[in-house]
Amino acid sequence: MQGGCTCGAVRYRMTEAPMFVNCCHCSWCQRETGSAFALNAIIETDRLEVTGAVERIGLPSASGKGQEVVRCPACKVALYSHYAGAGRLAAFVRVGTLDHPATCPPQVHIYTATKLPWVVLDGTVPEFDGYYSLRDIWPAAAQARREAMKARAAQT
Image (cartoon, rainbow, N blue to C red; front, side):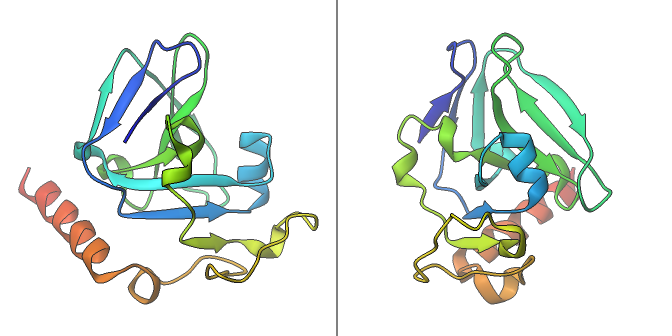
């Protein structure tokens, strides 16, 4: 899967399918995206090949731990983020920046307590008022990849 920014100065390629795809309806994501939600494909950062210079912007988050948003320095499109939980080990790639975003539908809807009332979910994808337990929701293969990611980081 490949994607990039609007002006083409930054391109990326995910060398594997994402571990998981979250659709976040929190008010922070709404404000930061200027949309109704953020759709993020979670992948190990070492499985994300980026060409072109990027800029990293620190932003606050509802957790108080912040996030690092990686943007194109020219057109300022947000390509992915790193959140405090995994830090730079995992990239939360903005699905809308993929060349074919339809290949990454959400596997869970989170923070639906602040979902905009005109966004109607059909109930076919799990929904949570807040966050969720990865152990309960992520497929076993995705959980194994996450553990392997953490183990690789511990070795460095």
